[in-house]
Image (cartoon, rainbow, N blue to C red; front, side):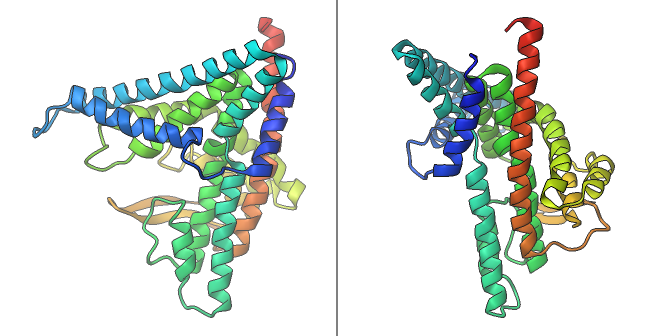
Length: 336
């Protein structure tokens, strides 16, 4: 990591704001997803016995094999691209670093999906629909829960929760690892998070197979979730949201969530916006009785989705600045 790294971070965020996350088959993250699917098939073939119920140990070994293969390929790709680019000159090296970090973050894509839900809800309300029919369809694109019976408030709640949680795994965490260990670490994080999204389900197929990918995702999100969620509280008053409410909710409810990391941003966002998040949600595996975050807050409304996206952007700026400062401090201490 050289002295131009601050420029790389700023440029990566700028490129994301300008072009977002284009939907094409050769996008690096989509290639990671395709690779993970191939790795799953290969590891199941190598470790498991067709037609038999394998032990949890063998299933976990198969999941670990997939995880190791995909992470190794992601790191190798990022390092090789950076190495070859730098051999061509400083400018190509900078462009390669920007490309890798841009591919690892997704704030614009997150905002685009969230605002699509808000527009759908407002359209349903304008048409005086008793239930948010198009809003349910829109929110189903970014959440894993069942959406066919959600009310307006429940769709709004699901969207805000998704923005809050994705402010970490879609933005803050890859920026954190990029600042600490470089662009290859950001892309490795994206591989880990992709495998958690694909394998970290608590159903019969993935309960044991996805054990290691899910635990690895928990581990790499641990520090970013806590640091960046606290920074979301600090950023809240800049947008006219409640600093006091955000901090109170963050410290009181951040550990109430079943996930070791998701509760931190959700608690911060709930207090900042003065709304209640969490509560029971329906998934394929059944009803999950999630704890409420900021239970004294009001029910979310469509307008809270836009507020959440604004807070996500402010949180991103604060997080990038703090993570860069951490990198500079580490560099000074250990003569990086």
